[in-house]
Image 1 (tube, rainbow over the protein chains, first blue to last red):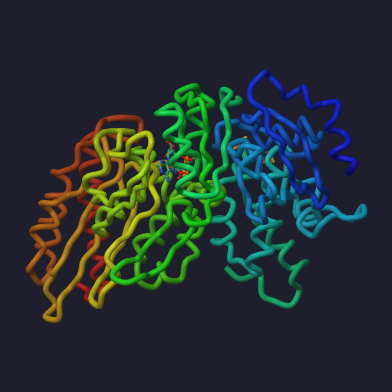
Image 2: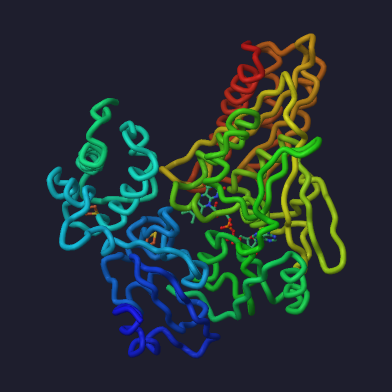
Length: 182
Length: 291
Ligand SMILES: Cc1cc2nc3c(=O)[nH]c(=O)nc-3n(C[C@H](O)[C@H](O)[C@H](O)COP(=O)(O)OP(=O)(O)OC[C@H]3O[C@@H](n4cnc5c(N)ncnc54)[C@H](O)[C@@H]3O)c2cc1C
Ligand code: FES
Ligand code: FES
C-alpha cells in the first residue's frame, strides 16, 4: 500500500452516492493506488477527492478550458471528461508528479523564471501539456507550441510568457539544440 | 458536474460488447472516448442504464491499407490520425481534419467511431469520409453488415445504427495515382466546432480529366451533406477555374444552414462557396495538378 492508497480508505464514501461501484487501480505519479468508487466518478474527482491531489484544477467542468489537464499514459487529457475507470490500469501524472525529491522540473523552473503565470489557475494544466510536448517533441517552433496549448485556456497572461516559458524549458531540457527560432 | 449513475462494462471482444448491448436492449450506450457522450450525460441529456466501454477491445484498434481499402478501426484516436504517416502521405484530407478537430487534449481521447456515430453535423470526420466514398462495418447480435456512409445519417444525432449494433470500423477505397484531397473548416474560436467545413476528394485519370469526385459539407445542415450535384459537374472534365467556381456555387446551393451564433444563413452559404473553391484547388495541387 502506498501513502496515496492508504489515504483512500477514509474518503471512499465521499464519492459514493449509491450508484454502482467499481474498483479503480492506477499508477499515479509512480505510486500504485486503488479505491472503490462509483462508476461515474470522473478522473479529476478521483485525483482531487479520493487521493487528495488538489493540484489539478477544475475550471469549466465542461471540457472547454484544460485546467484539469493530466497525463494519461503520457498524453495530456482533460480529466473532467474522463471517467476514472476509463483510465483503469493506466499511468497518470499530475502536477504533483513534476518535481522530484524537492527539485522543480525544468518546466516548473521555466514557468517561474519566465513569468509564465499570473493567477496560476491554468498553470498546472498548462505545465502538463508543456511537459508532454517537450518529452515527445524537442525544440518545437512557436507555432507548434501555440498549437499544443490550443486546449489550455489562460485568462491572464495573453500567452506570450507561457510560450516563452515553454521555450526556456526546452533549452533547459535540451541544451544542445536550437530553440530561439520561429 | 457528475454524470448520472450507470453500470459499467469493459468487454474484451466485439461479440461480448454486442452481447451486452443486446442484453440491455437500447438502455446501454457504447462508450468510446467519451468526449461527446460524457458532456451529454453531465447535462442529463443522456441517461443510459449501462455503458459498454469499447476501448479495451483489441480488434477495434487498427489503421492500415489492406487489399482495395484503407481500413480504420472504431477506437482509433483522432491524435493517431494526425500522427499517421500513411494518412499524411496518401489520405491528407484526414490529416487536415484531425488537425482541425477540437484541440490536442480532446484528440487524445476522441475516436473515429465516436466522431462518426455521434451524429452531430458539427463533427468533422463524416464529411471527409463521405467525400472519400467510405463504407462502415457494423456488428450486431449474430450478424454483421457493411453500409455506405452516405446511407448512414438520418437526422441530427440519428444514424442507421440499431441500439444493439456496434460500429467496428470504416473503410475507404485505397489511394490511387492522380488522387488528391483536402478538408478545411472555419471556426469562430480556437477549438470550436465548424461555422462551415468542406471536404473534397478528386481522382484524375491519365489524361488529366477528373474521373471521380466527392464533395461534402460540415455544419451546414441536420447532418453532414454529400454535395452530389457539385461533384457531378466536375466528373469527366479537365478542371479549370470556371468548373471550380461552378462546383462551388452548387455546393453552396446544397447547404441547408441555419442562422445561429456562428453566423447567418447567407454568411454560411458564402463560406461554403469560398471553402469549396479552396479545398478543390488544394486537392488538385495534391493530385499533382495546379489550376
Ligand atoms: C471541447 C470539445 C470540442 C470538440 N470539437 C470538435 C470539433 O471541432 N470537431 C469534431 O469533429 N468533434 C469535436 N468534438 C467532439 C470530439 O471529437 C468527440 O470525441 C467525438 O465527437 C466523439 O468521439 P468519442 O470517441 O469521444 O465518442 P463518445 O463520446 O464515447 O461517443 C459518442 C457517441 O457515439 C456512440 N459511439 C461511439 N463509438 C461507437 C461505436 N464504435 N459504435 C457505436 N456507437 C458508438 C456513443 O454511444 C455515443 O452516442 C469536440 C469535443 C469537445 C469536448
Ligand atoms: S475543467 Fe476540464 S476542461 Fe475545464
Ligand atoms: S495565469 Fe491566470 S488563467 Fe492563466
